Length: 195
Image (cartoon, rainbow, N blue to C red; front, side):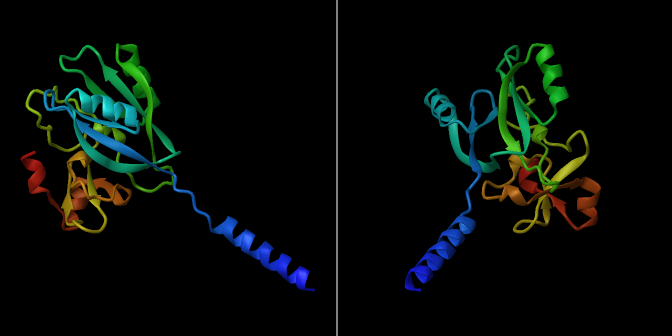
């Protein structure tokens, strides 16, 4: 009887440990800034982060945690741009189109949420400003969408997700139309206007 009880307790403890284990599937996405071109660069690679840091890029820390699976976000590089530029997109069609006109496809940069929840469109991370001034071009995205953090500074909306405060929990960012944001009492970030 004692042996049966010990085995039963061992079995229950083993099962509860197995069921209770949660694996963190979050990949840190490092953000770097090139003060010469104004480009922001995002990578999960510590090698890329450290290599770029050693040649003058400013390491800005972890921008967010990306899931290990979901919708792939593709990274492309334009070698023909005066200062070089990267573009991030969820669209395989856009990836193929840019590659066909000379952009270098660099693979999947990270994965975006895949559960139907609202998330930031990765194409908003594109740095297409040419980069002379180090300033971002601020205005609504092509689809007229803006970003609002649910919780915290939720009375403010942002045109570009990379201009949101560094302490933003990007897992709680909601994408909506600017008109919807305004109708819900949100106002545009004064900080972003002057970025």
